[in-house]
Image (cartoon, rainbow, N blue to C red; front, side, top):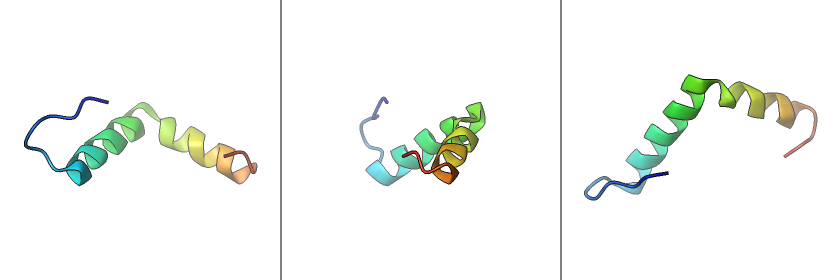
Length: 38
């Protein structure tokens, strides 16, 4: 994860999670959590 200077950490996390959701990793993580795997 690349953190750009001048951008607050919270904004970086929002961008990071948006990218994750874009690639569908979020759904995979949710499926793992439902199975009890964290």
